[in-house]
Every structure is written in C-alpha cells, then in structure tokens.
Image 1: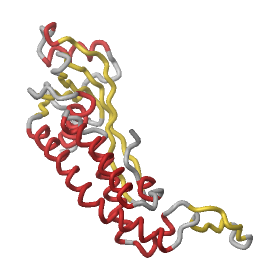
Image 2: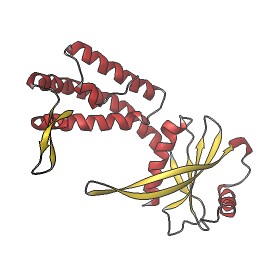
Image 3: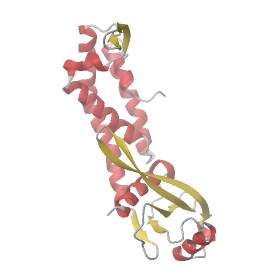
Length: 237
C-alpha cells in the first residue's frame, strides 16, 4: 500500500469519512509492522510525518505556501517565479486542517507503539569494545549478530558530517564485509579482529566493537538500526 504522507492530506477528497478511513487503514499497515517487531523505516516515517503535520497546524496562516503550487508568471525585475496555490480555496484549506487535527492523535498513538518496541530493543542491546580502543574512532569494525538467521555480521563502519540548514549532524554508514554462521564461529572477537586487520590493510589499528543481544528480532528493520544508533553514542562518547 502507499505510505501515509503529506500528499495523503493535501489530496484528500470531500468525503471526510472516506478520508479518515484511508488514514486509519494506512496506520493499520504501520501497526502490523510493529506487531512483527519491524520498526524501520515505519517509525521514522511516522515521526517525520507527525512533525510536518504539527508544523502545518501551528503555521496554518502560511499553509498555502506549503501546498502544491503552479507558476503564475515571472517577475523580470527580481528574476523569480511567481507561484500561486494550485486551486485551493478557503474551504479546501479548512478541510485539510480539520483532517490533520483529527489524524494527529491517531498518529501519536501508533508512534507510541513503535517507540515501546524501540525502547525494549535499545535496553536489550549492549555495545562492547573489542581489544584496545584507539583514539581514532571515525571508522572501524562492528560485529552484529542476526539470531533469526544464526549469523554474525562483520561490518565496516564509517562516520561523516553533513549539514542541514544551519545545523551539522553525524551520519554512520555500514557495509557488511562477511557473514559467519554462528555455529561455525570458533574464534574470539579479538581473533576475528586480528584476521580483519590482516585482510584489510587500510585500517592497521581499527576501532572495533561488538553488539551483544539475545533478541531474535528482524535484522535490517530493527536490530541493525538500533545497534547503529548505540554505536554512534559509543564512538563519540
């Protein structure tokens, strides 16, 4: 199904009951994801959508500027396009705002379900260093288990800085180097680290961490995203 988005509200029809049904049906999809302990990208998408909708309600006087627009002309003096809302009138705006205000509590309730799962996973994941931790930690190795598939993933991680507006944020990128069946692991994490050093000469003294958890939740949708967030905290703490 199509995920909920701002477009869901902007292009809502005249029938309020149909609009509400469409949104509730969309939220059902997210709750099903949470029922199966899959929190990514569902939780992040819902939180982002809620933030946008709350901003629109708070700034309803400028809502027309945030809605789809068409080119009405060109200002030759300023060399800028003159944009106008694409056919939206006051009743349209009120209907959209009413729908948004109705939907916000439902979004919050669904988000709370996802946050409970996130918190549970966060509490049941620990990040431990493997060997001596060097001063340089912006890249290194991260060992993360996937119990559903009985695998231990050996990841290389890299951190970077990016700007958004006037703020700067850190991002973490991971790449799976190898996945080892847990039943075949006969080495300690320290020995695995030494083997990686022998195989990859670009990191002679890598920061290396081990994710410890007994959870058998979905890997890509839950374990890895939470494990990466915990690694970021550990790397820059």
